[in-house]
Image (cartoon, rainbow, N blue to C red; front, side, top):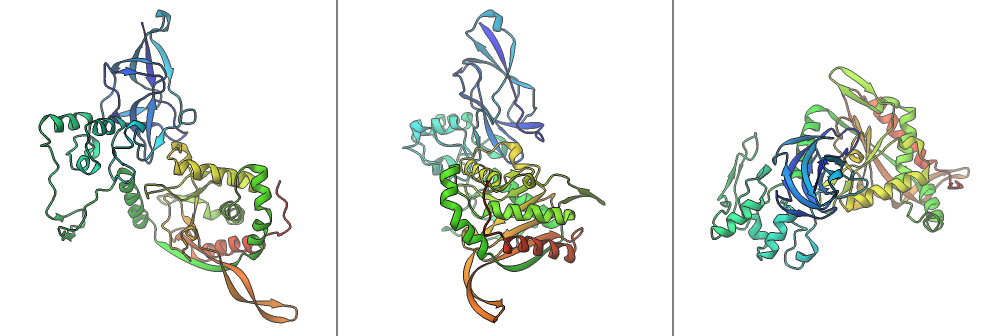
Length: 427
């Protein structure tokens, strides 16, 4: 018999610790290779940590709610290997090698036909879901159970107690809700109203947005631009591009390229504020806001976007967007951004007034591209033509970005898009 220590893996350059949120396996439980042992949480991403060996979970070294440092052992597995394997320290697969990053864990396949959790606003561990499915407990019934875990989560013990006590430990439904937040607003609730508890990620987003508004005086500037050349160029190359590269070319990488160029022209937009100090960022790391299946928002970051050509940007945009939808982003991939782009045109919106993604100082919103009759100047005089038009809006922190800088930067982004080279060759 041997022992293997499970080590909290490195989850990104800027992630030094994580909170243990759930023990999926208890001491004495049998564990298969790559089977989830525990769940951890960083600022925005929840991850399942898999076992590197099969065996028996001999000892849990931390309790739920404890903070674990990267590189620390948090569990010991007793294996059936040779004695020379005893006390071996094995690092777990990093999320890159074994991605199981999630916002809300999928239901195990064997139980998917019984309970549907995809629209649940609460987090339930795979173990809790498995027990609920086995005992035919519906999602709505599970939502009513009073949880004793972190942030009110329902644990295995809560569920077993619920079953043993004849389903008595139900969270009482409030007749009314008052003092939801520090502003002490009064809310009236009728019998037809549905009360939904924010999930962990929505709480973090809400807190982040409120803090951004409190920290930075927001100003938003708008321009309308003619992107006909850009649209016609993409229409011309998109089929050949997809056939050659194996993925589509969208407008997003073109927007990101223009932003990166404009930042080089106006580097004081690529800054952060620390008290009365301005930190001028050397790297140009562009975040792109992406909607998750849960309805929440996440911002994966393209690092050193100015060093990538249009093909490299397209590859990263497609990869990050795909893994965001699958809840497989690594913690380091949503950190380190210096500027953010949000494409509200994806939802058919004309324009937006986005909230700055702290600690950045500016965020660009791109609206829908629509055909419009526009007055065009020609050598023979003005004429009306059908053009592809769109709005750009830039929200910026007026503490450090004044109207001239913000407006000039926005205009420069527009110039790069309007003057797109129709004869450009992709390489």
